[in-house]
Length: 225
Length: 183
Image (cartoon, rainbow over all chains, first blue to last red; front, side, top):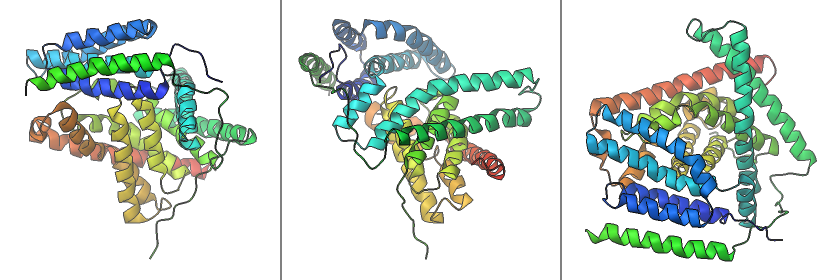
């Protein structure tokens, strides 16, 4: 059954994100770069990406200012501005790719007959980044409680950090592998999806507007040659 | 003459490689955003060399099958695809090249030197891919990307050195875990 959602098809999102990123970097030095940004921001707002935009803005601004700040060291005014613009281009492309739910991406991969181990691995990586962030925090906390400081004894700190971390990696991965095997997961058998990711009318409308806007800016870019 | 053997990956191998990729990305997370848009060629490879080499070498010691590093490259590339799409190609090509060099030289990961080479040179091999991407996407010539030749040489040597140091530390940790019967 097709899942009803406002999200754009995961594969399309990734593809358009890649296009936006490449185009954004190409257009960084154009005077109409701001117009390019605003056009796609409006398009995203029309297709209800407002929550992701709001979440991304602070990160992009802080990151952009850091990058611009770092460029001041050995760059001129325009280099600083272009560094900031590059981060904006990256942020614009990221809005689409961040909107992709990992599980939907995996389902779309399955439908495209992409090997099971790739989609499974991707899902594990995304899921375990959050889990290990917490694990690392706990290990660091334990190190602090034992009075080990990186500045005073870096080798001891390294041992106290890496050995427990790798032990956790081993135990978690073994537990997960057993759990997956008992649920019938295998690298040799094709997977099936409970939900089907369909290409909807919404995707078609988005694609048409997106391609039209991008074609217009590509035309503007190449007109000067 | 010994040939390079390709064995099928089990679910256990895939899970371990995926989990080690998650830890690698997490460990390089604080540095990555700072160097992601730096325009000097080699700066990213230099910054990422240590964490990537350290964790991937542990991954390769546990899953001693040809293709393990490429699998790590695919997983990390797919996650980075969601943040910076170009990074996917960067990771994939670098992992493949570095693994190919190590396996051509040493045939199998049972030889610790193969792990050292493969993990140690991973970051270094991202440099050519970054250069090609910068030429194609940003239209920047190789001279522009290199800037000061001395800085560029230092970045390359630093990426190789940090890569090997990271792989050495990873191998040492793996030795200890192997002695303890955990790996």
